[in-house]
Image (cartoon, rainbow, N blue to C red):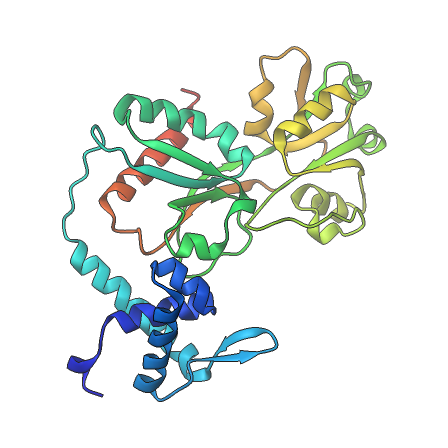
Length: 315
């Protein structure tokens, strides 16, 4: 194969096709027509003497040769993009860039207010577009459609860059009028009604089953190790809903401490340490290798870390 005769655009087509596994979606991502992408796939098949994608009952599936090629093609394109990008300058004072962030409401409530204050001071014309975990997929982050995702992650693709924002303990948030406040121990905790709250990863969530301890998370797994189980009255994916229900319905919300501390000056609430050990959770930010060397993105990542430092320091 003579490399001088290869259209490098075909490698871009191949990379997107193998990630999307769909000609129409790949065309949309590259902003070309579906017939143009179909023609590109035809040329790729000729170039590699391989079908590349095969239609099955599960949709379009890459061939074995295509699966072997995929990481090499991605590496080549990333290195080429880095080489062509050069020493780009970024002026935050005049920039009107929009940064799109996927953030859980825990991250949005605890970290982003501090980040916004920093932005207003040093980059007044920059805009933040905040999305929820259900709005995006790993593919969106990998393709650079989302600048950053900030959440708790159980598993991550190896290609992603990541950095820890902070580690957080857990606290119990209760109405100050909750009868268990004056006698708070493991027995009273277990006898009370609870609101469960969590949202990790990406994608649309599914209904919860109170009996499925393995999917309930840190709090319930910690109780299970003691041979105990709490009485969950409400499941929610929203921390503010959980905190409101704790006040209105005498439920106990066991949640990351920084979320609970949003009500530290509200006399309607009481914050108490859980009567059992719960492992700390870790908040991370992740981003695409496509954006790793972008000057504006480097600047923004540093600003997020500074905002996290200020939250940690109580500034």
